[in-house]
Length: 180
Image 1 (cartoon, helix red, strand yellow):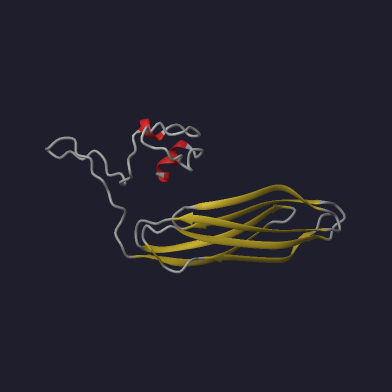
Image 2 (cartoon, helix red, strand yellow):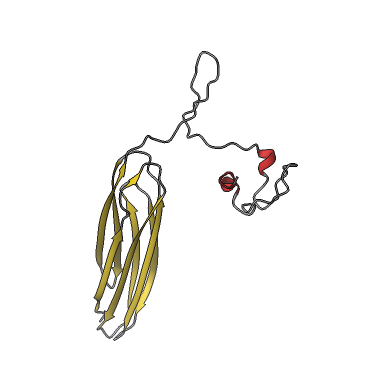
């Protein structure tokens, strides 16, 4: 028979203090636990750890068929970080959650919250097609660098005026614009 139970379990969610709109922030969740199997057969559990905010951003860790030996125990801990930025003032709720399934079926969670305050939404660049004023895009404004100068990911810049190598030359192409 399998008899797995939580001997100890500590879970927490850590939120920043209030932040302004369009500010990058990081929050975290932690969980540590000690599981014991008093049974005479090995027990197997699946573990899903999730850190999620009310805006839908999330980070997960999962482990399937973790063995808790007969007459033995299993101890582990997880630290998850989530980086986010919010473009409108509001309250953000953060939840750290752990779910066990299999030989042990249980869910535990911890919550915290913070406020996103003041400021204006991200600046928008409107692209006008004709003097008549047809709006083609409301995309956030970004620095533009022509593809002929950007190069491929992992390649050097073809910019004839640049003698300095970008430290971002090995970054994926969609992220290269952040490096200039």
